[in-house]
Structures are given as structure tokens and as C-alpha cells.
Length: 78
Image (cartoon, rainbow, N blue to C red; front, side, top):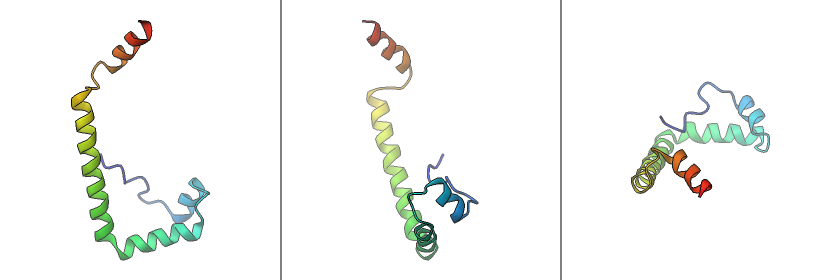
């Protein structure tokens, strides 16, 4: 599931309300930048997702998540 799809259908105002440290003007600027550079932004986000999936695969290959809770509890009990 893509992680970047957090705000479909959200307004700049609702995003600003959720992240009040970001000014409303900056939220609008982000929207404008995205609309002007959609292909580049989408390519960048796709690459970030690909790299993230690759890193996660490597981590899980070395330390499978199956049984993780049991391993942690066993360490705590020893």
C-alpha cells in the first residue's frame, strides 16, 4: 500500500489544521509545486517507496518478523 496517499480529497485548510506548525500559505505552496511538477514529484515518491521496500525486504530477510513478539518476550524473560 503506498504510504504517500495520506491526504486524498483533503483541503489545504484541513492539512494545515492537522499540522499547525506548517503555515497555510506553505500548504498552498506545496499544492502549487506538486501541480506544476507532478511527474517529477511522482517519480521521486515512487523511487522513495521502491528504496523503502528494498530496505524493508533486507531487514526482514535478516530478521524475519514472524515470531518477533515471542523472541522479544523470550529475551525479556531470560
